[in-house]
Length: 94
Image (cartoon, rainbow, N blue to C red; front, side, top):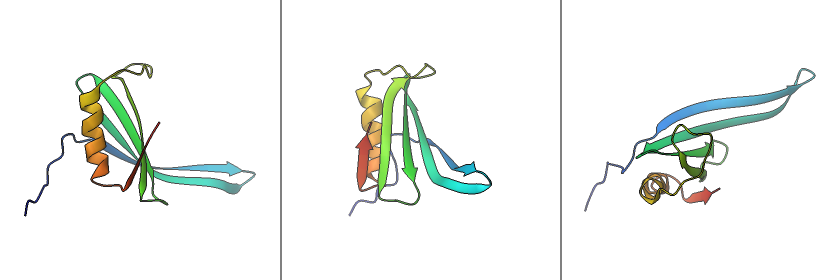
């Protein structure tokens, strides 16, 4: 049996809650984790909403530090996917 504890990439993880209020009433509430991956000049972001812990959505790869310019970075993309697939049964791509 092999026990695996390492990942090909380690993201910065940010937990946030966004609330939308109107006229003193709470209209929407989003509780989520954002994963920020950086490798070899590439940046990818993933978001998982904590009301559905079975799914995460991956965005990118983008040019690191750029204005959201999409790039080709297969190694960074595969590393981020491997990290997320170990934790979520469903990984969506956008």
